[in-house]
Image 1: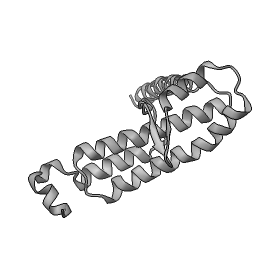
Image 2: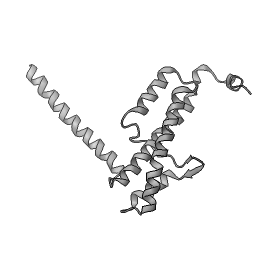
Image 3: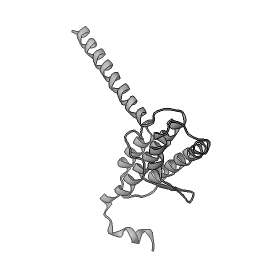
Length: 157
């Protein structure tokens, strides 16, 4: 069956528009696209299934990693990033419905989040705590910016 025949029942409004596509791609390419996103329950890469959410949780509970775990994480991180990049390319080039595009975006952002959590674990950082620290840093900067803005307004009077 041809692709056109399959999609004849879908209306034009169900498909992703160029503006919506650009918005999703911009968001996905931002430095902190992964912040607050859910790690996928599992992902299949190169024929192997990884129970990603459980893996990240279990590794987060451990103080120290053994050599096998460290090697597995080091091998998995580039695969997760590669898969996220493939999702991004599909999002950029394929004709997708809004639902398909959103699912690709969520998967890619979740994979980036998992890669970041695993990288943080390798580096001895707190993973999930890192997101909280980042939020605190942003809030502190907002307060500093607000105080500076108030000072500027006073000086203009």
